[in-house]
Image 1 (cartoon, rainbow, N blue to C red):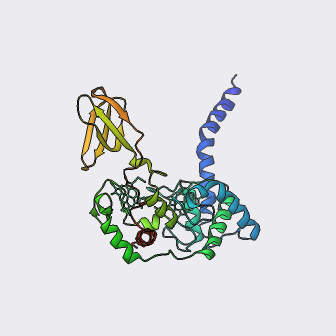
Image 2 (image 1 turned 45 degrees about the horizontal axis):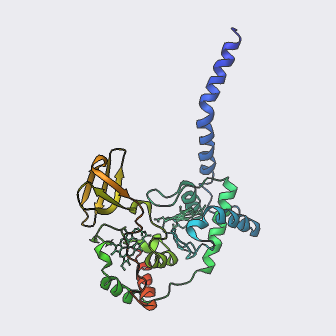
Image 3 (image 1 turned 60 degrees about the horizontal axis):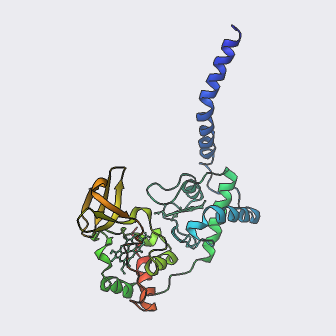
Length: 266
Ligand code: HEC
Ligand code: HEC
């Protein structure tokens, strides 16, 4: 038993350190890449291997051809979070805090192959159709600023659009306008609550726990309700955003998309 004790202690120590050590290895191997300016995996095979991982892990947001969807177009050759291979590597590995870009952790080689594929996309970029200046007028006529803000001006019911041209692809922008219910951001879910003996209140869900629910009503006021005071909560409401379909012509929609895509402050 006496002999066993140190062995047991060692075992416990190993267990305690194995987890953190594994995490450290990961970071150390990235640090080793820090001095490296360029991607070590850029052959055609690397690019195809990268494409496979891209299709399974990135395409849902960046589109199968990288031209973007909920995530931005990656084919323009301009990456505002960093243009170097290393910046791309780290943005994919760590995700981009405060945005919808998640962290993706694969082996270093696989990560570099994805970087090689993303780089290869830059050759196929194309400009957005339409006239942004005419689109701006559509934006004003359609009273989009009732719910959206650009550079601090406008309503707050919908998401800020100041840099939406950086964040989203033209494809996604067009889809958001024509079919807002298709892909609603979880932060903008609409709910309607029915207070006992009062009028129903519709708004955007801000918070909810077992006892209460808070929403922002159409006047941008925060309303809080105790669940015991409600006779119902309806979550089936789609987007608060009215679809543009039918209200504007094709050219006007294209111009509006061009305007939104041009919102790219440095
Ligand atoms: C859940 C959606 C989602 C997934 C999955 C996703 N991304 Fe993103 N990605 C985004 C969003 C949203 C942004 C924009 C962040 C911002 O600037 O607001 C982004 C940004 C980026 C950027 C930075 C672009 C720039 O201009 O600097 C790169 C590079 C990128 N993604 C690559 C990838 C790759 C490669 C994968 C797969 C391994 C991936 N993303 C998976 C949503 C996603
Ligand atoms: C009644 C309020 C309201 C009005 C008016 C409105 N929107 Fe929206 N919009 C929203 C809300 C809420 C969302 C988020 C939910 C969703 O994705 O549908 C949204 C989402 C969007 C998005 C997607 C943003 C992103 O980051 O993906 C775009 C682009 C957009 N709106 C543009 C417009 C334009 C252009 C107009 C004018 C034609 C407009 N909206 C009018 C409420 C509104």
